[in-house]
Length: 279
Image 1 (cartoon, rainbow, N blue to C red):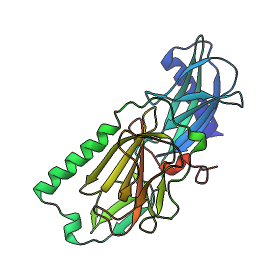
Image 2 (cartoon, rainbow, N blue to C red):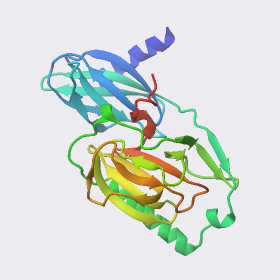
Image 3 (cartoon, rainbow, N blue to C red):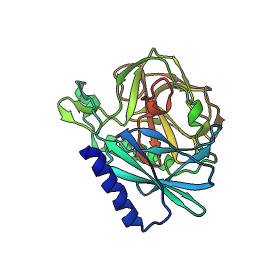
Image 4 (cartoon, rainbow, N blue to C red):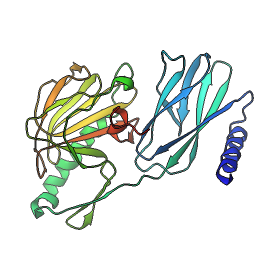
């Protein structure tokens, strides 16, 4: 009862904040840090945009007659309630998105000192590699992600989950912003969505790496590859064989590191795949 009352107060606050009239308060959505959440808007009005957390998100009218939108929630997004604003020609409808704190695993590994301590030359190389990856997040790719037909890139065992707080030789590292999937060397990796290959490069930590842009600011990253089967600049289709699992770079065994950024939000890539989706 108290929680419902508080939600009503928040919705009223949004109305006052945005000075809106002719507004319908529709649904309250819930998600966890790192999720990509699919939201819907009822009615046959022409929707022009969907905004949340000061960002515009992709929308599409589907065969069910509803407008569907996809919102990316960063790994460390503040756990609170946000307005979800659907803008049409004459009206503005507001939903609410309640972001819950993620229950992320603590991961502790011990590696040889040469794999965790780096000299000045190596640090410069690592920073240059990171910059090259970040640059792909700014690249424009036409179209929008085909979320409803996403597939898993590889079959294997999830060895390190998304968001895990990593301790390497007892020292805290950045939260794990992707998913590690252990599989035999040479296991085929498939593109989970269609898109443009933005980067293929050998990197110090990540080994052979590929980044693919899928439109609307969605970029996927694949690291520690054994070899690649597509070219930078090439357009690939969902389910296409793009690379093979390897153990290149700083890796303790063959696996795929699969990362995803959605309009710069670090999100759990498994949240777009049907077999992984939270019900």
